[in-house]
Image (cartoon, rainbow, N blue to C red; front, side, top):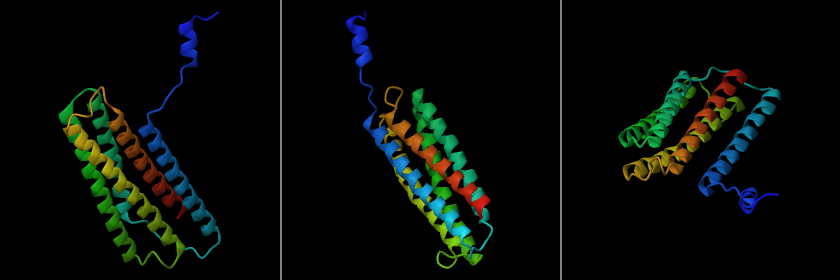
Length: 192
C-alpha cells in the first residue's frame, strides 16, 4: 500500500508554462501552413507548365548566415544559464544583426530573381519561391521582435539562470525559423 505522499506524487498534475505552450501552438500552425504550401507546390508542378530556374546565389549565402545566427543564439542560451550577462547581450545582438542580414540578402535574392525574369506573377514556379521566402521572412521579422524583447530582458537582468523561460522561448523559436528555412531551401533546391 502506498503512503499519502506517494499518492499525491502519483496524482500530481504536470503543467506546462502557458507562454511556452503558446509558442509551440504557433510553431505547429506555421508547420501546417508550410506543409500545405509545399504540398500545393508538388501538386501544381505535376500539372505541367512549370518553368525551371536556378535559385539566386544569395539564397545559398543567406542560408549560411542564418545557420550562423543559430550558433550565436545557442551561445546566448548557454550564457543565460551561467549568468554571463555580457555574453548573453552580445550573443543576442549578434543573432539579431545576422537575422537582419539574412532578410536583406533575401531581398537582394528577389532582385536576382527579377534579373532572371522570374516574377511573382506568371509561371507558378516563381510565385512559389516568392511566397515561401516572403512568408518565411514575415515569420523571421516576428523572430526579430522576440529577439528584441529578449535583449531588453537581458539588459534589465530579467534573463538569468533562475529565469530562463524568455530565453528558452526565444531560442526555440529562432532555431525553428532557421530549421524551417533550411527545409524550404532544400525543398526548392531538390524540387525546382
